[in-house]
Length: 614
Image (cartoon, rainbow, N blue to C red; front, side, top):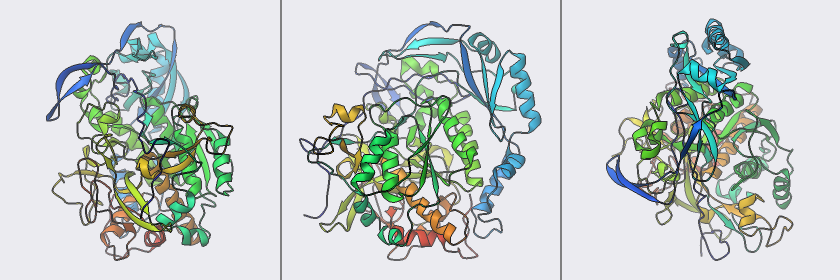
């Protein structure tokens, strides 16, 4: 029988994470995330064109927050010369431009596109006059962190911060309306974060299977064979001299990483951690960080890894990205977090009992993220993000009854690379057999993909398949894909609480040890990020700049691909709505990587008449 898949105790299975009760104020000036599910049914409402039954979210308002409680907030400032920045990014990514891959240093970026010093001073004076203290400022001045009491923050932004309790017993505070900027901050400030501390960001849900018989799932050797990386490894490409940053909201156990490395004879340095806004919690239901690190070790074992660990709040989300980018010490950033784009844009689609938390969402949220992502692109950093694990219906990631067609943010951003999911099958001898678009209708699972409701289609998004019956002029997701199906998952060692709940024994490396098979685009994103690191190492050896923003080149080589090409073109399966087809499609993007062919093509000098703007 051709093909391989991992099978756990009692046969293959998918385990959805526990329901996450979310309620969030519009703490970013126009930007919020929706609430998650409970079991009790509620009235039917209109969601897009489909009437669905929404679950009830038992969120209890407990009363006003202690006026003397001190909170940390983040002020997002508007940068200077936004039009010029867009032109600069287009030139950096256009092979026909003399500025092609001439990246900016952080100092150059700050000078040209950071917040004007006068604006930073104006914001600081306004905050201090209101009784807040400035505790931190980003190097480009685009983010100011301040501390003040609830009473003073309420007065400054015209809000009431109250205490709440979600149905699972979690206590949090949140403003009950969108903040109003005082006159002195209008036109200078783009957003305010930190008016709530509700956990809203979760890893893209991934399948896991308890093991029977030790290490099942794809091994580093399997992945190298499947994605044609063996020749690269044999040629010395192993991530040496490269650094990858991870945006994480949980922690990991170095002992788990060491166990994984020992099993596959991997020699790697300990992972560096960097706390952001006080750091993350402890490994919980699934340690996303463990998954990311072990996948990277499988592909680029000599790469230096910095895990930026922060809070799962909206404020923590932006601060994580900003710190990873502004530090300018990594060539690649891998993200396996996200939130349904439609529920950011349309608060009326949130459950009726929490709609009041979603005043004027959308533009401010996306503007804050884009500020960080544009800086990364200008400085030559590659960012890759998972596209989601519920197919074309990302809102069902937090509410299975919500069948709104939606992509996920930040994967929908045109300034980063969205990584979708496939089901990978190998031949009996371990060589590549085929892949299908990942979709499991019974579980509502599949690779995220579709059309953004916010971002227009960028100029570089061209090539066979990018103009289809589904195209509507908006950004198309994903860009590329890799294995993500639970039944063809990755062998991972993880002794987090979920692993132990499934019967794993952290004291044993045998059949009862904590070897787990994990799928999901949470694994596909770090796999692609690791291959990008190999490309950056090859570029360094050739004295070339790093690959930087990948998408213009990914679409260029995809559109000009001969046979064999740089991608495995996935033409079967789909993602619960969009089918996988020849060329680009909304299920798997261009397909999955053939690293031996892809990396040289990404490094090859483009023809002089090639147009590939940002």
